[in-house]
Length: 370
Image 1 (cartoon, helix red, strand yellow):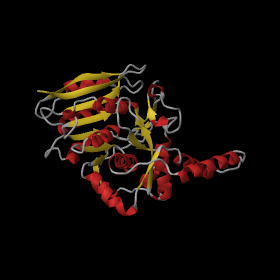
Image 2: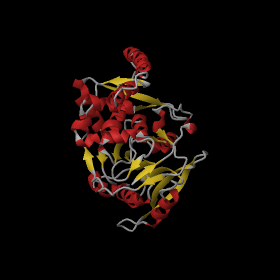
Image 3: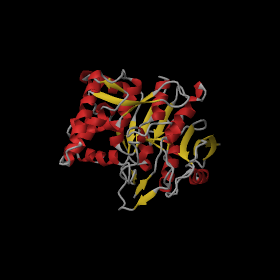
Image 4: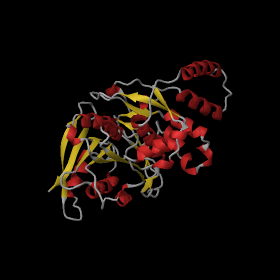
């Protein structure tokens, strides 16, 4: 099953460029393409210390409204470039799936059981960062935090960069998202020295623009040449970059792993991987993850098994309604208040944010009702 969202960047006052289309806003009805059901990916911990890194990471600068410090997020074009450099487009079966994931922008944006949208930066994650930034210092420092369905992990980036006392674990359905987006984004915002793109890149971009004008006159370019040209052009469209010396990669990844664990796969088997019997989380955050009703029981189960009692808190950012799929705030809340954990305890919710945009977006605060 594949889902399609129709998007706009109008609410964030973004230019309608290819990179800014990563910030998604669902305005129209979702369309569903029926395909054969695929087995869920079992949950497991991702090995941060062996995560592959390029020599340079290129990023866009994201300025969240009313948040003083900007966030850096890796460009998707840079992901394609890294994969081309590492020759993984054909050789590694797992990473071959990344290319269709990266190119999902028109006919489909989510594929049930295969890809859950982690390469895009969803609009409600912006709301989440803005809301977290307005909380009192004591509520967002010295915390153990879990972000579910993290993708580009904007809330985690904010919480990690806000205070060195926070430890933030991240989870996404696809390990490719963790590998190529989440870990590089954490490095950009916590470890690496980010600077403006080098002048050589600008010069190369100008040369390629000239080459593009010439090549557009030639209608006989084959498809492979066009794909290569797109990667080369897109990789230069960035606001910032950070160099990664090869000899420093182990140290950098070690610094990430000291404050972050990463998990991939389905929520149904996630609690066993989190070691929640030993220590639970002070806070759980999640954005744009309640669009499909079939996933709600597993999400709520993670809340109940992983959140500390009695004072732990979850924040859920979502659109009020996801047309065409059946998910949204109402079905989530209805199921939440009816679900008990093994001890017979239930959770409660309250709305703490509502947008003024055409398509309503909300943030719910979920806590124990003891």
